[in-house]
Length: 465
Image (tube, rainbow, N blue to C red; front, side, top):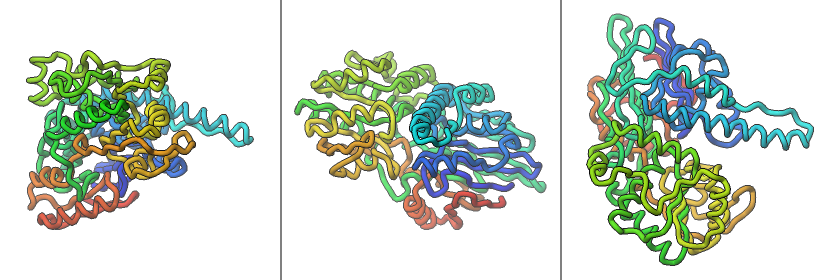
């Protein structure tokens, strides 16, 4: 087997790895959109590790756009194979890929207006809604712990990764040269003990393992304190008459926040102020979460015995309409607004930040990883001035950074998960999906645990397995 690292190599976005079997079959592990500076993103997203038409199948770990977002681009370039994913991942991709295509076309239209005025040639979107629709026809839904053969010569098994609804680790078992070989891929691993989803399930024993490393060298606070931290932020902000603005990913983070607020509401631990989920995609995704109770953990299953709607309560409003979204900025009473995007780079949350970030009564609550060069990162750094829609704004609002809600395992969680592997069998670990500093720290920790060979591949690196 030959493995090429084509994305999420020494960074946290654009997950994509090409596995070529001895019999000539080609498998793509994830097909994610690289998110970063425009010129760099365009250059990377426009390049695939092989002729698209020569790739036989895609194995998709989960629906987040940095793992699935280039699938329509792969289709546009000629891919006509099958995309294997869990049933919940397919349902989420049906929403997210269409939403991403809309963004691609809207962005191209926005820039083309500028280019026309300058007499410059127009740009094409990475892909269109039609590409996304055709891509969805290629999906094959697979259950957890249900081995399947995507191509001749290999068997794959998905297990619950506990990251978002439908997320999966995968093991790929191949027989070559008369012996069985197995490659594992963690995708993104969840933080154990979180609400809604089960903890990550141990993988089959592997010879090689591709592991995420987002929080190498870091440790989250106890998951059990997430509700307490949320209640504290909402309570003190409401007491001073302010708004809590929470940039949150439409998939996963928003649903966890709503579930926590639902519990706090029932426990009478937060003031009776309105809560708004202002993201059409998040509204639709919540519907998918409601339709997949088979992915819930035991605590949520038990909670359903007393509350049949863990994603809704009296003062919660899901906002689809643009006029209603704009009206929230004209309201000057305490409230909570949960809005996409998660790193505050686009979407409705930018309008809420622009209108509220200069008022010290308000709070911006950060509940997830913020990549470099994003507005969310600049807010985490508490810069005096941040640019929103190209205009400077003084950051006077309180900034509350809470890692309790992280959907990624921290270093102890990663070490515990990898520790379920057979040390004698595991020949090498490849660290992906992490900034280089995080990967180096995790590499040192793994070496200290007795793992002899830990690699940090760069984009384009090729290894023979």
